[in-house]
Image (cartoon, rainbow, N blue to C red; front, top):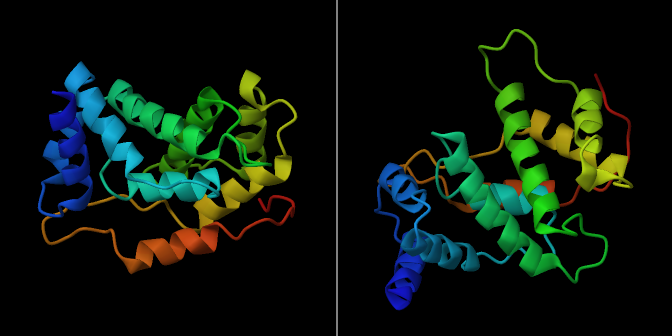
Length: 193
């Protein structure tokens, strides 16, 4: 079944005619077979040298993260593992551990939801986002500018997720241009509230 799982993982990535909802529900089962599929799916990405935000957006642009928090966490766990493997020997990357990547990925997801949900009366500002992340054990001595830039980027450009694949697939040149643009931020300006 491992060979079949590997093949399915690659087919899922490159076949645009798979219903994105079925894809997500199938891969979120967290059984041994679905784990092989999602691992192979993650291996089809090359995150080496990308900042975490750009890699994360590339990953979530291919399916829609929704549903139960444990399913979302499962997908982010696999992303974090692959990002860490691709960048563990890259100097200056925030992915020092899989857990660090996963924690920041989940934080980015929550920030995107908070900032771009029109039903919320108030939205998180930059400094609370930075402060909340720095309170976790994974981010001592973490560059404040990196967190601030993540906030600014997500506030300016919501993370793009797939809306569906059949005739509506978001994976296009547009998303890669946005990702390329996001990968260029390196400044260290203060948060603008």
